[in-house]
Amino acid sequence: MKGSDHVHAFAGDKWNEVVWRMRLKLTTESTTHLNFHASEDKRYLISFNKDGTHIMVDDSMLAAAGIKHSLGDWHIVEISRIDNVLRVAVDNVLEIEETDSNPLPPGRIWFEVLDESEVLFDDVNVCSPINRD
Image (cartoon, rainbow, N blue to C red):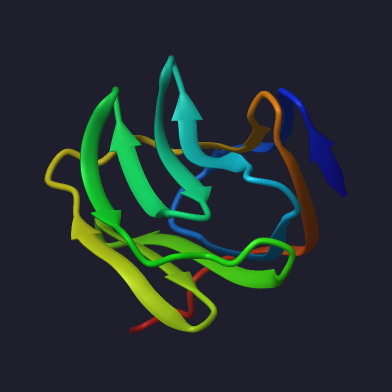
């Protein structure tokens, strides 16, 4: 799937505790927002670009990582919120692990490619976490 300029793609509407994983390629100096638990004008916004990754909630920064992401290469991105802990891993490196003391309710997953950006997505998977009982 290719997104360019300002486009959106949505998946489901009531995801709760999930792990979603995809391959993602920034073909230009692009920014994409990987949103989840999006409902009622609230969302976890994960911004991903060549300069790093950060998570915002309600326009407030929750966590950030300044690990660089190369342009033109495929990156494996994994995102989860399990037991109120948000995790973002890129290429098997945990970049962000942050507990949210005020977690958002279930909501949809939403891909957003910003203006003047081109991003490729492939092998998108959304899974329930393994039962830990």
